[in-house]
Length: 218
Image 1 (cartoon, rainbow, N blue to C red):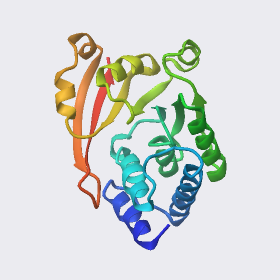
Image 2 (spheres, rainbow, N blue to C red):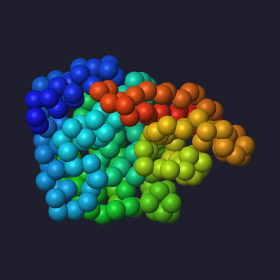
Image 3 (tube, rainbow, N blue to C red):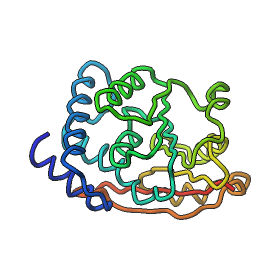
């Protein structure tokens, strides 16, 4: 990782209350290099620069950290190249993480990164959360569900519901305009959850606007 991008990672993490140890920085560096290498052969992410990955993948993933107190198990839906689940596991090793994605090559990459970094208490599953076998094996198991690849907030709320424990938290990672999505939620969906808050911020060292919507399962 270039010196400037390393600085962006370290200082950007501090903006979310995270002090990165040298060993963790080296792990992010390895993750970055493997992602760039695999991305030459298969399209895992449209972001192909070191700086872009640090800002839009690593720091975007770490932005969730302030909202994780009390959460010990996390389901990452549509986890792509491992975001945000793997970075969150890297900075909070006690967190039990399950990644799920419908694209086999992305799961293969996630599994490769998990092995390469020697991460324990994290697994990658190929499938869709609508699949009956997925629901039967994972239903009701998680303190929190997170997704940043879902465009439809209502669909995310409905599909996440059976995977959460009672009182569990859904974290929906969004860009700008999240407030409008919230207003459009049907009453039937609102009655299943309690909206906690919407956290809005800009990613460090950029103008990218982000939002995290938090809901509690009733």
